[in-house]
Image (cartoon, rainbow, N blue to C red; front, top):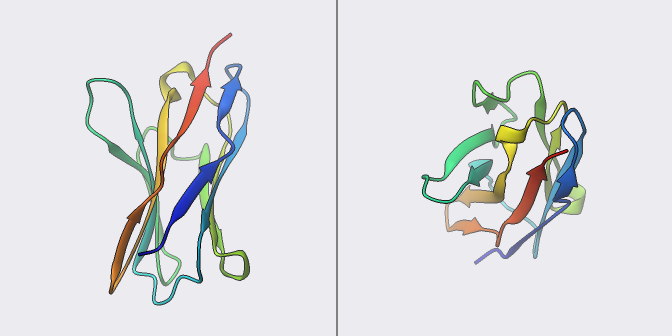
Length: 115
């Protein structure tokens, strides 16, 4: 099973930016889908941004125009660039990768948007 480690979370002021990284323990073969999700206490985990193996992206309406998902195959990594952050973006962010023989989640990274 592919192991994932997220990083890049932290405390940022409203309007600020963060870049989350998700590093895989091995090369990801035949990726079906890579996604970033977030979760706050008492709520279900929700999809924030996703990318198919072919590069097609999709975003939650709440983050369109502010967040960008990307990947670097050479580094076995997936990224989430988050701009114009709002307090309601505060959550634990998780990355997920899915393929023919794997469906892996990272441990999560906390993002807090507060002045």
